[in-house]
Amino acid sequence: MHQGIVRLCFFLGVFALVALWELMAPRRPLATNKNQRWFANIIIVVLNTGLVQALFPVLPFGLAVIAGAKGWGLFNSFEPAYWIKCLLSFLILDFTVYLQHVLFHYLPVLWRLHRMHHTDLDIDVTTGNRFHPFEIILSTCIKLAVVALIGAPAFAVLVFEIVLNAASQFNHGNILLPLGMDSFLRFVIVTPDMHRVHHSVVPAETNSNFGFAIPWWDRLFGTYRAWPQAGHDNMSIGLNQYRNPEQLKLWHLLLNPFK
Image (tube, rainbow, N blue to C red; front, side):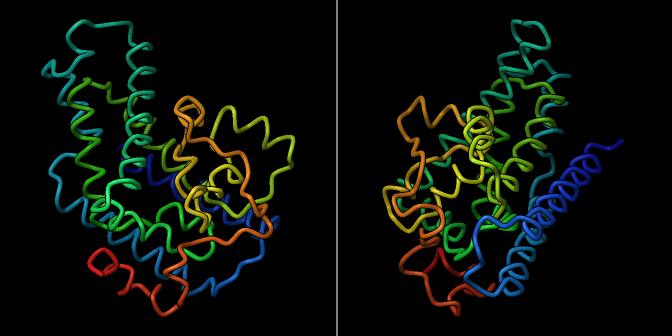
C-alpha cells in the first residue's frame, strides 16, 4: 500500500477516535464556538497539506528512500543493525522536533510563526494540526535536512511521521484520562494533561512541556512541568493578547505572523 494512503488512514482513524472520546468523556467544557474553531483548524490542515505537496518535489519518506539507495547519511556509512538504525533515527527525529519547538518559542521571528498554534482558546483534537503554513514549510525543511544527514531508513521515517501526527492529535485531545493512567502513560508518551500545561496563558507554563511524542526530553532538559498552577479545570488556555474571537477567524490567523 502507498505510504501516503497508510498515513492518511492513521490520521483519519486517530482523529475520529479522539473526536469521539472528546464527545463521550471531555476533560474540560469548551469556552468558545466549536464550529468556528473546527472550520478554521480543518481548513488550515487542508491548506498546509496542499502547500507541502505543491512546494516539495520530495518529502521525508521519499528522501529516505533516495538516501538509502545512494548511500547518503550517517547510518548508510557505517551500517549498524537495521533495528538500531530505525530506533536511533526515530529518537533523533523526535529530539529534533523537541529542539525545534523550543526554538520556535524563544526566537522572536520563529515565535511569530508558532504563536498562531497557541491562540486557540480551547484545546482539542483539531488544535493538534493547527500550525501556520510557514511553520509547516520550515518544519518540513528541517525534517528533510535531518533525514538526509543521518540517512534514516524509510520505514523509520514512515513510523515517525505516523506516531508524531497521532501523538499530536492525542495529546491535544480534550479527553479525560484517570489520574493513575495519566501518571503511568506520561512516562511513555506525552499525555493530554501533560501537554495542556503548554497551552496555558501563564508564560512559565507556555514555555514548558515541549515534547510531542516522547516525554523524556522535557525531563532531561528541565522543561517539564507536571501541572498548571491553577489546575486543569481553572487554567486559561491561549494567549492573553489574543482573546477576541474576531482575531481568531481564519483570515486573521493566516495574517497573524505579520501583525
